[in-house]
Image (cartoon, rainbow, N blue to C red; front, side, top):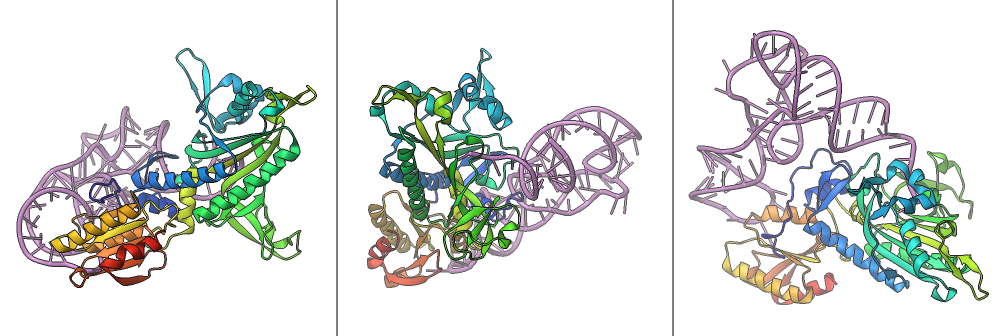
Length: 417
RNA sequence: CGGGGUGUAGCUCAGCUUGGCUAGAGCGCUUGGUUCGGGACCAAGAGGCCCCGAGUUCGAAUCUCGGCACCCCGACCA
């Protein structure tokens, strides 16, 4: 992609109402723009990051044996009445009416819909187990959206639901999902703790939250210094309490929730009549679990954990582009043609994943924008061309080195792999 | 939903306390020239329902009342 044609409006100054670093940089870098409080537009680069995160999530869900489907955002009221959540979810659910006055909720989560589907399509123990997921827009009427993508009224979520004949099998899948989540967050490159959690409105009695340590986080977690134990705490109580599994002191850490998994049991299957016939012909409720990841929130999470004062530092796995080429002397035909050649060669190596800054602006502007946008590997084509040289820069470390033009692609192919 | 703050040019903001002539700056944008590897310089321009509505007043960006929007703290949050 050429910067000259890309919609990536970078800002020198932060819009005043951005506090969290991820909010500021995503805005300044031209990744997102607000439409309304807690409602965001994803510009091309923001969408590219989102898609890369989705891809990792899909790969790991598929690897764990889950199947992707897509459920509606519009949920009829009657379905939610059956679980009693039309009332208990209350104002957190956006509600709309169709032209006949029939009421719908905009799905804040999909237990009702998926369980209803399973109740209609699954009848025998031979149809089970099933692991189904989707990546879809969710709506929650947050009383107070905040920090850009971190807490929105409309956001993208991966939600997966498991259906088993027994609690034992369901718990095995729960464990598989837990390790799948660990792989996902590792691949995306964000640090996290798996914390035992309160199941909350969703219900059930086994639950873990995946929390990334972050200043702007809304949760407080007690973390053990030595073992991997982590738990939720209220206020400052954490510091006073020793770790239950090894008796060492714990420290309290602020964090943000990235994912949440629940063992649901038969709470929804009973209410929505999701039952199967077992070997003996007895009707039994399906045993369920559900597993969510805040996909759009992960964009902010990556920025929160990887940035410096100049801008973002994307890991290769989710960077909007793997490589950015800066042409610093647009008025020199030999420089431009050298850059075009590098662009062609790198594009062959990383199709669609190379950004060429061919804008007719001063070099300083390109360097600053590049630091802001945070593409991991940078090739600077300019004054070295006469001697057949280019410069390679690594955004994360600030490392710079000169590389002969004829070895540049090979060099970068390794760095950006 | 409680508390606080902010709405003036595309962005960041000054002006408001103490009402007064064509409402300002920096950045960005357009045009011309000089520059050209870390956010250049000079010159000329374009760009405003001063959030909305009512009031007070000879006169309102400025004062009063009522709305709305956005941000921050808290409550809430699969």
